[in-house]
Length: 308
Length: 254
Image (cartoon, rainbow over all chains, first blue to last red):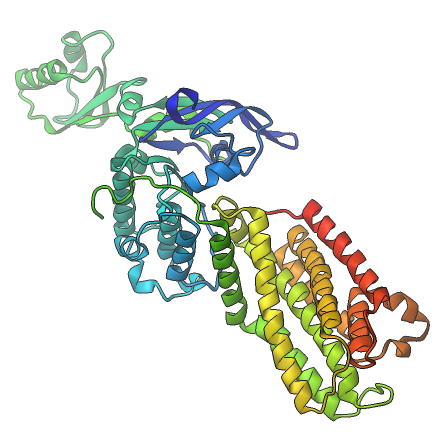
């Protein structure tokens, strides 16, 4: 199987009529990792994931999932993957437990339905028809359906959308357990904290291409610098501070008495700033270091205007 | 959950077990669905009782129930294989059920086989119920049961093809409306309770409808004791081939 990756996508192109949804996308997901696919609406996330799931035939490029072609070798691939759709996927009249048992029955060695239900808090609503479940319960059932067949690779499309904080925690815990047991997880999300919390690798897609890929730490480290904030007496002479700091540093009084120093924030910078404050007889209140978040990176790469 | 719970152990269940589980689930969904039962059980039973008891339509000579029972059996097949299947499949498509099952180990043809099994189970229950009611109303069926079974199976194939074609090509709401409208039109104009002779010049055209071929074919056997009605069999077979081929060609899973 192609270099051992759970997912190997190269040069993927997918068009809908005249619109190009995916435009030469490359993606590689190592086995046993959690990869978060981020991107604005319409960036091509769902098309990419659904092509990997075998729903769509690529117009160009190759897709290998667990070494298999998801369209021509679908029969071999389907038992080995678990899929959580963004919504639906269940008979409206089916009871939660009934549907989960049914998905289990389609697999050779499924998980124990009772303990999976309990882990996802579905045991109390097992007799409730799907259409009467809350949004969160529907989400958790869809998640349970994705993993009940003990797959090697699971695709989760916005797994925590619409969940309350408890539901999010339970979902995150399960994703971590999946990873711990060697399952590869590919998830799409709009929640940057979810990606930072769970993902070994983050893939940012925009305009049908990958615009950034790497661990959350690496993505946040590069690019624009971090900053240091503090409050003190208004009207301090920042020029004397900048003289003591490296050339690439900038400083500004954002509001009267509220200062921001931007540059390479390291222990040396912190020491320089605090000793400068001491020289000026200023107590630097509320001093804080601000790191770039994944959201900052995301907005830098994909812009701030609203998408469709 | 404990460490190692999720250690991958993928694999499909044996095919027969998947199809059996799918057919059982689909059958439960149909039996649990009130509107479906109205269509498949209540309406045929009420029509059989009402038109047998009251002389509303001139059904020709002999016992009215001898004319009506075969037509109602045809209606039962129409209600389950066409109307019911079209509506449920249309909404399964709409709610992403077909999409989700499409990435399960169950192959698409296996899903279709399961749907067919579940339609046949419901039809068997309908036939048992309607036969019991008709016998209580004084029905005296004639003919060869195997000829009846052949007609019912061909009718099921024809209506399934058309139902799936409808469900797989238009929106769920449109399927719901169209399937019910077609049900009523075929009920009236397909020789179910009104003899086709009443339609005069239209009769020859109406005879080519699958419902007319089925109800008149069943009547030939059950009322008049004829052998296999090859004309009706040919009409049903043609509809079955055309409907199933068109459904296979045009059915959209999402």
